[in-house]
Image (cartoon, rainbow over the protein chains, first blue to last red):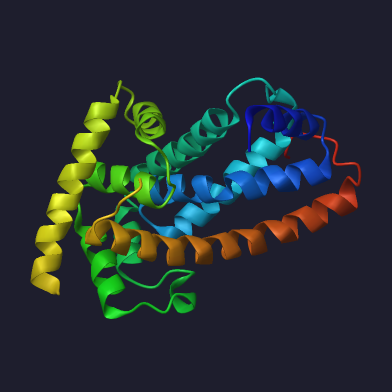
Length: 185
Length: 50
């Protein structure tokens, strides 16, 4: 979608146009889900966070600046929703539940018929260091470029993350995954 | 990305399957809410959540 079409869409969204809202949702849902998966590392919680994000955006769409960067605005809201969830979770020592969730069943498992190779990739991904896994998921699940990933990670980590750092993390993540997959496959 | 190595191709394959399943799940979750909201606010006037 080009800039002009996006501006027009955002204007209609900010005015509460239902069809525009549906188009907005379709345009960005994948990125929002992937950002939530990257941050929370649990698909069940990521779905809840994505739902909460869109509900928040929906209730605040009048604040949307049609000439602004909708993707940044939206992904920042998603990241903040996830950060709040992590904060609440840590305060309840719910990491145990999250760990169990990451290891076991989740809401989409039954729908995804994984072959052995895909299962190995998923297992290796689960074992990566958090900062490497997040960068990799944002790149390959969300399809974000390095600048967009740097922005999401900067917001999340509270300090500037450069595109070079993103590239380094992705390369290290891939190197770690290759080593793990060599043992698994 | 124009060229992908084997690992990237596998990552894309895995992510595609999982994200598509998650998208369907999110559609399902939100469609319920949209229906309720449409009943309450047919003109889709933005309003704060309770």
